Image (tube, rainbow, N blue to C red; front, side, top):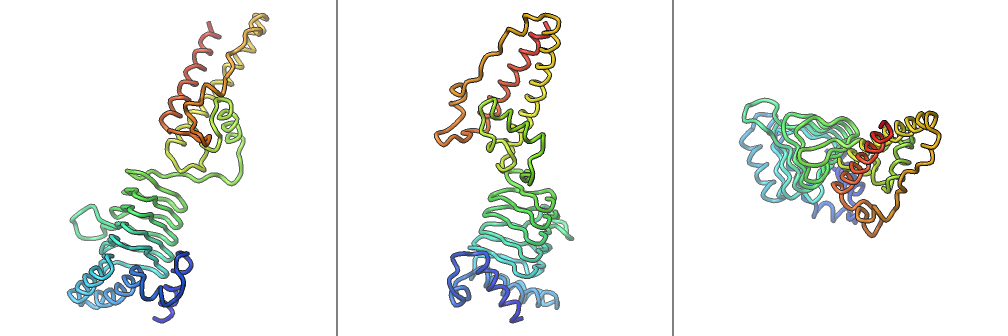
Length: 285
């Protein structure tokens, strides 16, 4: 028991830079108090003292603002930061080294008995206000963004954001040839490459990536058709495409040089895609 308490205190120092000393952690961290209340309540629950367990859980909620059902299964080094408004349902299962911030709900989506709350793997982090609902599994090392509403399984090491939750893939460690082509196309049409890569946890950025891939393919196709036409009509090569000027894209870029609006970026890239199609049609004609 004392080993677990020492682990709990150490996890606070590891994950909260505001923690200054052990006495402060023991006396002023409601997340820690809620966990200790839960362990006692869970012990009563497993021994079939249901009413006593629920009463103790309710008392803990009154003191800490954190509601943990005594039937929930919680692993080691569990940390609730701030804690107010956290709700953990009866059949929820939480692995080791999990972190929850205030306002997180691990809730159910049905009134039927049985497994109806989520399972969180080891090292999962749920941001403030996140709602993880239903008998789903959040893989080890996954991240749930603040205020996200998650109702489907999340794979390991993934990040999920938005309403409903959308899985964001992470930036690859090495730059693939496809990624390099995408960055070159982003530079060509006037976008900062950092705003259209996986470093940005934004579904709009993924859409822009797909559009850039499409533009790159169309650009290559138009170039190939141009070479064929030059062979058929040599003076065709004298015709020049209009130059892309950075001033044409200033409306889509803020003062810091980053993309101002995902919607504006998508529209701008779509316009470039349409222009490329027109050039292709003119070349065919």
